[in-house]
Image (tube, rainbow, N blue to C red):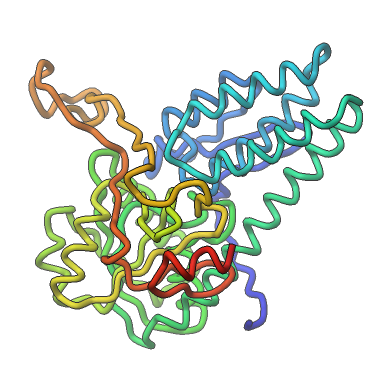
Amino acid sequence: MREKINIKFPYPAFYFKNNSLFLLDQTKLPRKIVYIEIKELKDLIKAIKELKVRGAPLIGVVAGYGIYLLSQKIKDNLKENLLLSISQLRNTRPTAKNLFYVLDSLEEIIRKEDNPKIIKKEIKRKVLYFHKKEIVNCLKIAQYGDKLIPQKAKILTICNTGHLATGGIGTALGIIFYSAKRRKEIICYICETRPLLQGARLTTFEILNSPFQSIKPILITDNMVGVVMKDVDLVLVGADRVALNGDTANKIGTKTLAICAQYYKKPFYVACPTSTIDKNIKIGKEIIIEERKKEEIIKINNYYLAPKKIECYNPAFDITENRLISAIITEKGIIYPPFYKNLPKIL
């Protein structure tokens, strides 16, 4: 692996200071930079459900810090209250695997120990470990992914997969940042990502506030993919959960990119840490897909785009079948098909 490269962003997705957790409210971006303080469990649950904090890896890390914060504040019945808090956090975003990966590990600590002091100490140790591991894994993903990026590259991506979604430099977008750091010239086509516009609001914000002038971001609407695909070199996306056969759940619209990429014979790469791979799910059909409220579709802010009475279907994610995926880029290397054989090997 190449040497470590430290890439700093002006607005961290979160920070933990003096036993207080502060989250960058991503629903306000790019108009306002607002940090909200998480004081109680209900504040964290609300922030996750309302996408004030989002991105599968980042949700996992932040949930870990939230449990640590609660462990410092709870006075009585520490085990019972922490286990209840973990149960409530599990119900916030059902598709994001990293959330369960972190919470399951913390629950194991809590259940096997009775001494409150040791529980608190072990939770802190584990949460700091998860955060550090996330930073290291993002960098390794970027280093491996860089091998797939030409010196002059046109890349198509969707949603947001940078430091606002991970806690490190990012997964798919982290690869783009790392390649730019190595002086590669990149044109990045960014799908706006309806209905909540994570691409338009967040990915553009990250790139324009990054130190890399060699990245040229170009925003497109989601229905322009067919026009743009013939001109790009590759598609690079993240993941919220990956089945053992390589079927991948990611932000709604990802499957459209994969189908279009196959038609034009363009490589379609998924970037994610191995903590996103679910060892208990064999195929994509088993992944629970979160459905969200119709208001996200029919209005923007307080302005209605459609009649209030109209029925809507609003899945937050879709499943990209393994046959549409060229490779999965992880911190342990680039995994190629057949995924049902090669993914279990790295786990």
